Image (cartoon, rainbow, N blue to C red; front, side, top):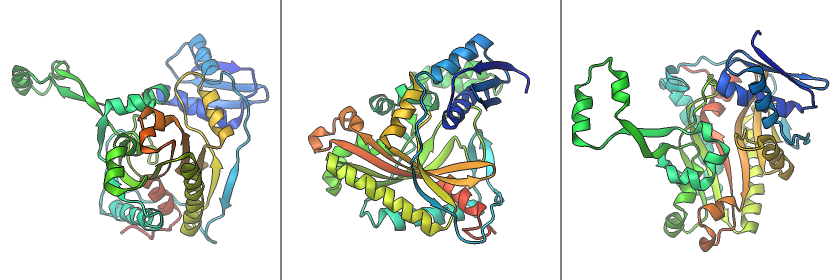
Length: 361
């Protein structure tokens, strides 16, 4: 591929190289990151200059060190399985967003029921329905803008003045620039992760249901820029188990969730492995933050082989005290939190790929 090249001459682990590729691909689309004996060579089709690309690569890999991955489970799947990309009846309506027909809806409904029956009910967790929007302040308190600012989808609205509404209503279809000038950011954003709804309303939820353990399902939105694909969506549905409690309660339920997910995916019969993992951070020294997460073994992912790579369909996450402090949960007896989430669209796609949900009509 022709384009802007930069060669980084220090050793880089394969996981870090892959995260670097995804981070740069978010902004510039066509990116290759080739592992070398002494480092990596990065090629971007267009966008930055070579010095700018070098600065970005050095920033991302600052403080890098190789951290061994912990494998919790490996499962070959049911005997005789083959992987075939399923007939995808979804209709693309925007980048990363789809209109779903009856075939896909039926498959999703089956996966949703499995999650409720095998996870929410055995945990005795009240099932909540998360909305598409939440307060922008919730993301600020959660530190989302420090870690994942590029993924945020902000909501915008026409200004509230009466005559502004009259003016916009009278604009002709082609007057896009004039119409856009009347919009301003609202105080809400599209939900990037469902567990934030639980933390933001923890006191009322505890008063109503007398527990710090909940299941929640709802739509999730993440701005993926150039990264869209049938399994990398800008809008999808998430199922989560969320735990708030004492340090001991959270530690116990983190292990309980990890065990439940291990058993759940083994029962599904899909090939997979469960490994220690990290998020693709965008903030300062993202590789150091990523490797701290790996060292602490605070995140585990369920990865299904698909095509030439792996598809992450679920994760179990320990947050420590961060949300207990940022959401003021100490007064509720909460010293820590953890959650376990499943991307319902991705799991549906994976199970259809291996023929484990039958053949769509």
